[in-house]
Image 1 (cartoon, one colour):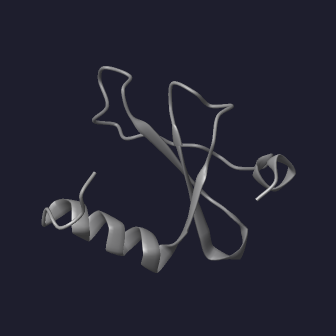
Image 2 (tube, rainbow, N blue to C red):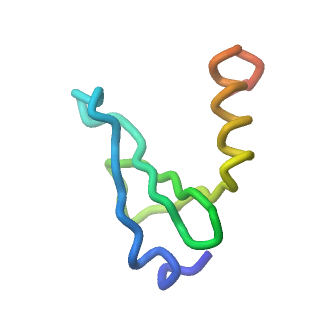
Length: 67
């Protein structure tokens, strides 16, 4: 995904974030979701489909993803 594709993205972070060490997410075109480090907004962006992101988050919650 090119930076041009991300230019209109509206990035949000959790309201529960208090220390600044968090990620931001944005809805992208084509039903995709962008994820980036809030401390490096110009850095890399991971792009997931909604089902991929759901599976990843479920894996983290049930401790089946090695991160």
